[in-house]
Length: 107
Image 1 (cartoon, rainbow, N blue to C red):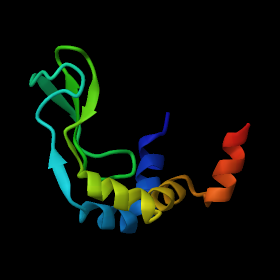
Image 2: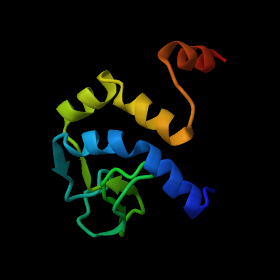
Image 3: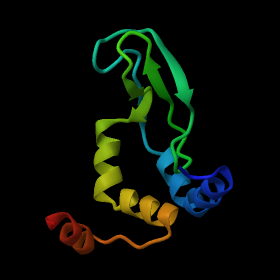
Image 4: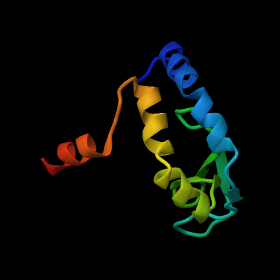
């Protein structure tokens, strides 16, 4: 578990990338992805990186899901541009590259 002070420090390192991500196109999900219920409660308004994305808990089936999420095109851009690796690297204080990730995943 990450202590609050450490979480804030890590989020500070990600701030420039998070600002770029906030400019991507978003969509709102009004129903649970699993049971299609509209009964939910918002449990978070930011993810661990500080991206302003709402997470909900379905009151009927218990699934956690994103209420606000990137559009499919924005997800394509998020992964293809390297933003995902950059924000993870900044948050964790390590540099990730594709070759190292693939090498690690072989095992």
